Length: 221
Image 1 (cartoon, helix red, strand yellow):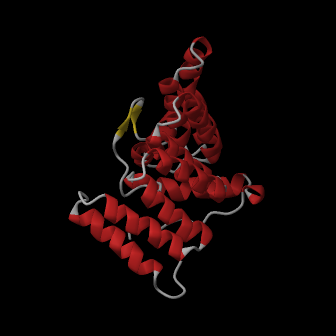
Image 2: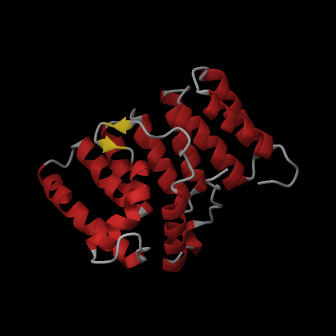
C-alpha cells in the first residue's frame, strides 16, 4: 500500500519530538486511518484529511517559509493559531455552534494538532452526537495522539448510530490491527464492511481484501 499504517504509542510517553515526527509522517503520506473512504464533505466544510496534502505549503507560507519546505512543529502551531483566531472570536458569541466547532477542529487537524482538534470535535459531538463523520475524525485524532482505546470507543459509538458506516468499519479494522495487534478483530470489522457496503467500487473492495490478506499473514502487523 502507498499509505502505511502508523503504529501508535501511549500518550504518556509522547513529547514534542515524537509529535513532530508524527506530523512529518502524516504530511508526507496523509492520515492513514480513514484515507480509503474519507473525502465526503462535513456540514462545516471539506473533510480535514483532504487538506493534509496542502498543509506543508500552507504552513510554510503562513510563517514566511518556502512552499514545499517541511514546516517545523512550532510553525504548524503558529499556522493553526492564525487560522483559528477569527473562528474562536466567532465562537465567543456562539459557543453552541456545532459547525463552527467543527471548523476549528478542522484547522487543528490539518496542522496535526490532534489533541486540540479532538477537543473541539468532542464539543461539537456534545451538541450533535449523531454526527458519525465527525466522530470518526475524532477517533483518528485520539489514535494519532496515542489513545488507541479511546479511538476504538468512539468508532464503536459511531457504529451504534450507523452500523454500516464504511469509514468507521474501515478505521476500526485498521486500529484493531495496528493499534491492538488484533487481527481477528480487524478481519471481523472489514468483513462487516464488505458485507454491509456492496456498493463499494471494485478498487476499494480490492484494497480492503488486500488488507484482510495481509492481516492473516503470520507475523505481519
